[in-house]
Image 1 (tube, helix red, strand yellow):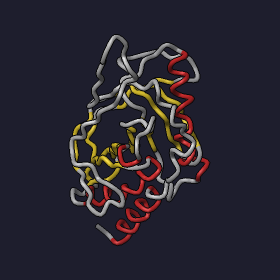
Image 2 (image 1 turned 60 degrees about the vertical axis):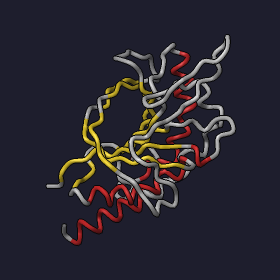
Image 3 (image 1 turned 60 degrees about the horizontal axis):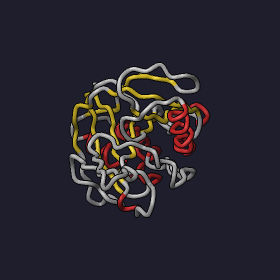
Image 4 (image 1 turned 120 degrees about the vertical axis):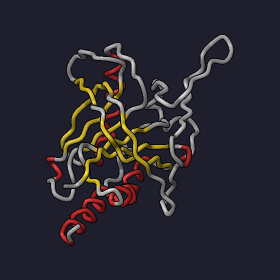
Length: 223
């Protein structure tokens, strides 16, 4: 790899590593109606079902801040149907749309098929802030025709490099540089929007270390 390419990759890693504050506007009760997603289980005890509790089983060891020890791997991600809100502007604002998205989902009688996730399309190092494109999304089962303001799309199957990180969701982007380093070992480059799936809702008395975010980066071999 050329020196110029190395500098570009490092700049990209730094810029994504400072997204920050993604979840600062999320209230603790925002996910009270969120269903268990892939890799989660639900249990019913007694005559009435209690609120569903996510028990996430990551496919690789969880990486913990400050990510001195970091675990990454790759997999083929299946396609996923989802509804979403699109956002243009600072990535620090993206997460604040998730409670509204969940309320609109419920208002239209649609059921989620897993935990919410966000998609980030642009490199903050080279894209003006007001042009940064992101989406807040909720997976659903099968094709749907939601009413505005919801939109529907399918996230296509692809190969992704991924990691599962613990801690405050606002800190998840700090793991990006480590994941990009892992990609370097395979000569991979980013080939689509980065996905953050918030697999454990920040509700009740959960501690920050109990939260988990799966970061997925679509990859392709660098030409």
